[in-house]
Length: 75
Image 1: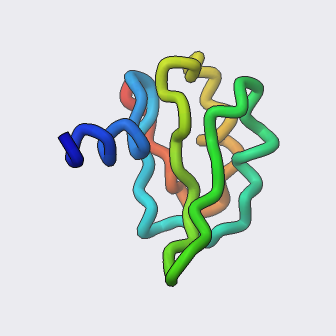
Image 2: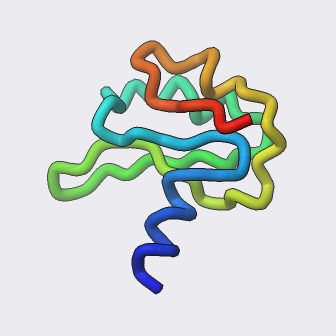
């Protein structure tokens, strides 16, 4: 159960996140038209996460915005 919750925060049917590449610039968050992305900022963890994978529409604006290649297209 815990693994499936973590997986939903790191992938949608369209895109996957590698949080280790994230530099916490947060440029992807305002770029997302469906507000699917949020910050993780606690106890040494500073990266982006997916808060509603079902709302993700596959526009790939997060991929184009990210300077470090955090997002990988799955389609």
